[in-house]
Amino acid sequence: MNFVEMPDFRQGWARRIRESIRQRPHSGPTVMVAQRIIPLDRARTFVTFLVVLYHSVINYTHFGIGGDRMRWLGFDLIVLFEDSFFMACMFFISGLFVSDSLARRGSANFLSNRGWRLGIPYLGSIFVLMPIAYFRYQFPDAADINFFHFWWRTLTTGPWPPGPAWFLWVLLTLDAIAALLWAVVPRAIEALGRRIDTLRDRPMTAFAAFLVFSIIIYLPLRLEFGDSSWFVPGHYPLIIQTSRILLYAGYFFAGVGIGAAGLRSGPLAEKGEIVKHWMVWFAFALAFYGAILVLVYAHHNWIVDFRSPPLWWHTAYGVSFAMFCASMTLTIPAVFLRFAGSPLRLLDTMQPSAYGIYLLHFIPLIWLQYLVYDPAFPAFVKFAIVFAGTLSTSWGLTVLLRKIPVLARLI
Image (cartoon, rainbow, N blue to C red; front, top):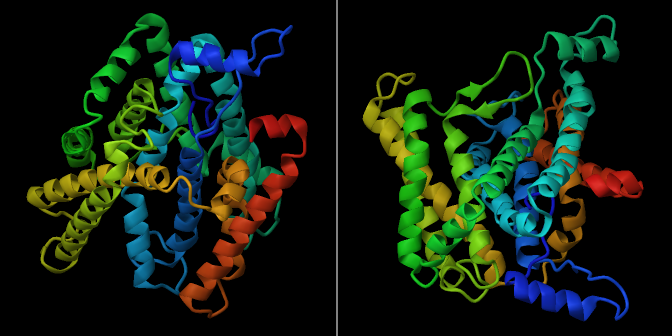
């Protein structure tokens, strides 16, 4: 399982059988009863919240893609912080539930379920949601405003941006690879889980290994392509950031391995050593983020050729980025597991709608940015309007759509 389907868990087949026997009627068939891991629900929902925050502030940054004349440097710091870890963390969390889902469903049923939960929303996003969102850029200048003409031109000649739905096709591809491995080499994922489980009681060794792993899967593509290159096959909406292809895949399968080791008793066990050391991982994350900031400052003030930094700078930035990403990716689930008993009503209330918010938020986001573009409001006021309006609108719309049974099964 993954981002869009939080799991039911059992510790091995014996426990699954015992739990199903307790829950089934005496004369009925065996029933597998879902049991959620609330802290990981919260972690996934929190990352979704960060996605909405990221997209709400980026229009008001200096060094990003801000299109509004009102900007604030603090928003650049937020964007740099989030962009350096949150999507990799999303793939990591998504991978945590794959092993359990494959064990319960089998490869074919697992892939069918993923196609339903990821493929159908992806198609809905690229054919319906994103054209509605991006029509905002056509709206002010079109002499004859015709949405259907814009929609057809998007599909036939492009550009055809997928918006946040790019995550869905990449995740579906990774799920398909995991299902293929499960079918062809059935013990491979189990072996990966056993190998990772050996680090369960050695948190610093596990952390160091994750840092090295992150550098290996990120730095070579970062040096080859830079961090602003995107793989775009023609005008079709199958894009992915080129330098992060291996990073996302690696983090997804790291999550798969940790899930195979057992989420209740393995490296991410609620009372485990990695969770107990959450403050250490967060302290390292802050230190590595500080290194990123120093390198950004050096880029803007000390390097003569701004557009072509030297190799040492690219290498140092890539290493700092990878280590920050690894530290935050451990910190997020560890924090929510460490404080599992704490009341977090906002995230718990938001959780059932998180997937819908992720899919829908681009529509109110882009149109609200357009509505506040001309007024000379301070950047923070514009951001507050866009963020509050985007979150509340996409959340409310998700609640309404989930009242339709077929959509409730999707989002």
